[in-house]
Image (cartoon, rainbow, N blue to C red; front, side):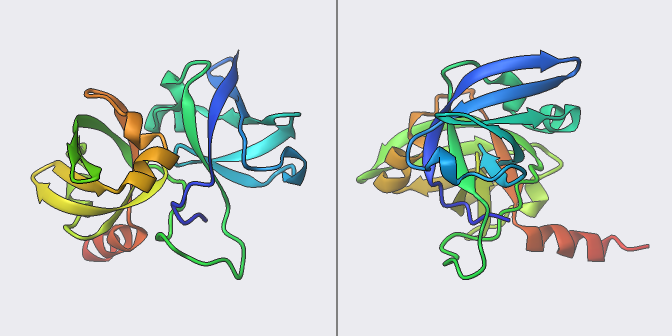
Length: 197
């Protein structure tokens, strides 16, 4: 479980294909590599991955076919920046919202334009996800906990403050870019209760 508050922006240092799966090597600053434990969870652009091996500058994780199908990790290239967050520990402050690293699908960036000191980010969600997004509700975009500022059909907008734009990958998003989306867990369970048969 995560909070959506990014600890570090790392980069893809290596990609190895194993059949239909991938192995990603991720390097970063801001998290001491020797503090990583084998088997611990780290959210990479909002996708919960398991540390299989630590390296001098980061870690190696496996990405399953399921994760490649449902997230943008299959499209990353060496050198691409990625948002990183270690899992929540008991006693930590919860400054964002509960993020599970279970991506619902990917959206498409429609626009990123300056607004005040920050930016306005517009994203088109997939049709099967739009009903789980609510105005002033929480959503994770590439693992970043954000609040929906505007909603019209499948398109939602986020008001990015300067800190978020500078300390995550979101400030560098371009039009047409795909991003991982995770709806708020409460919305998922409400939907399931309403659908019970």
